[in-house]
Length: 360
Image (cartoon, rainbow, N blue to C red; front, top):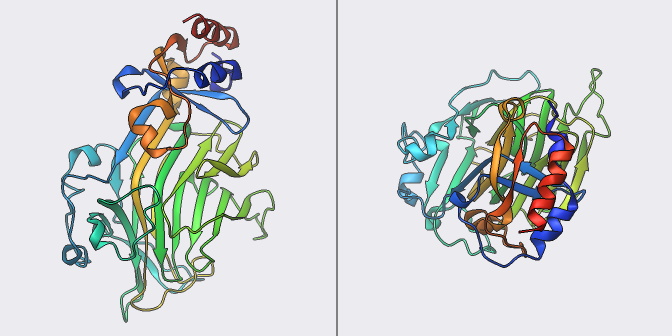
């Protein structure tokens, strides 16, 4: 059975979509989805998710959000959320090279009213309602730093494209992560260190250090963005089977063929700190956070690869109504591009798909 590598649709299909009529598709119009990679290849995905926190049905006010010991939140009782996401509540041991243990709390991931956010962003994408807040804080007199982590429940993801509309804030001493994870040696990270300048982000494939503790040059890139992570932007990670690419507001900022995840994993977002060299030490009473308005993700799984998936109606992901709200720079639109594809077919079948699209 062919690998998913053989199922990248040639650029000819992408060109066809670019000249299609500007009609956005609905999610139910599409069986499978395509994205265009940084190399100009069109990648086919079987699974699609869109999460919009701007109008979450139940949000917390400033007084509610200030309670740091909530046992339940509007998220923990919302089945739509809990079907896809798991909020972590584990505690780490104190790292010998760090000062604090990391304590993940359910109460640190909250749907917050706009007026309750600790620091407002510029609202560059028109966000004026609620957002999902992930926060980390250091209580006065405590040897713990409280943290937030949410994991996607599908642990069989293998290749994906994820876009997160978000902004960050915070005192020095926290790490804000958006990443794909399998284990400490198989991980693709977008990280913001709150001790850095507000235009610095870090794009890394793990492991970043060799067995002797030396940095691996190919593993990590420090990027200066044209803007500030305290403002709302679209952050995107593409995970192909042989390449990772990172994007900021639609522009590629890093690319790596070294250290690409070769086995299945899952998507994670977190905010944490342990007082160590990497995160830095947060002052007592300090806080940092990630504010998310939307998440859009398309992905394949090893099951898709092994079992095969029929695609009757194929849509460019930027042309689906919900995803288009995440990526506002899209200029192409196609409602339910006709054609068939099956995961597990060889390259000849994909070329046949292109021919069918062209004659529609």
